[in-house]
Image (tube, rainbow, N blue to C red):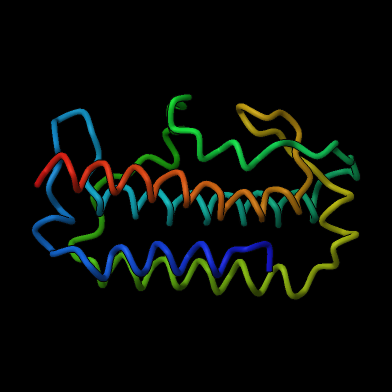
Length: 161
């Protein structure tokens, strides 16, 4: 649903081909390692689902026009991650990252299977670059965001090789 599983499989396929050493290595002091990128993906998905649940529970219905969220993959446009979703180095292995990502995906899929598309379209909250996005687009955004960071992980792998 929303292309999330296909996009996640690409992430899983990539991380299954890297070593623990590669996963923890940073190209420079001011860039993230692959493990830190995976932590960011975990934190971001958690944050989005928490926001969606909060908006449905406490928000007022407010629709939003569709946004070109597929542009998220354009890495020429840089966005500073909010502090709440910046990695702190909690993952010490690829398996730890894989397990955490699996848990957040279970929560995401539970949410999407238990809320109607109409409900997800009736509420919105703002994205820093796209403005107000409805909750359905936020769910789809998770996958596009992962594709953006898959490219980043590939760049990191090239830089450390």
